[in-house]
Length: 66
Image (tube, rainbow, N blue to C red; front, side, top):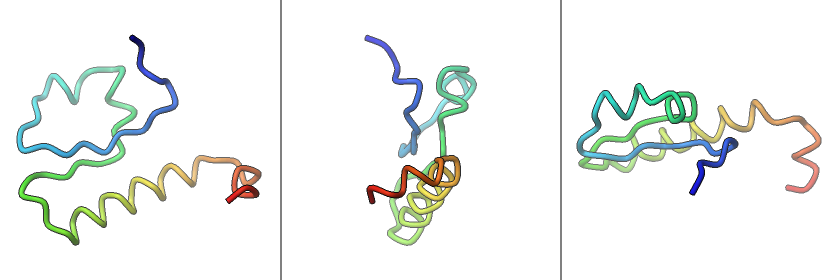
């Protein structure tokens, strides 16, 4: 199994270790973090922020099909 190099990650966890955050394969792909207990407004904000960051890095031509 391999990790998709184009994947972006929104981490949702009650417990997150420093080893996970420092992992060079994952570190640059983390676009946000949501801690438990999930609060609707914070979850929505994290999702929006992650999606905005990803969409800013896409070429304009990718939006032609949306």
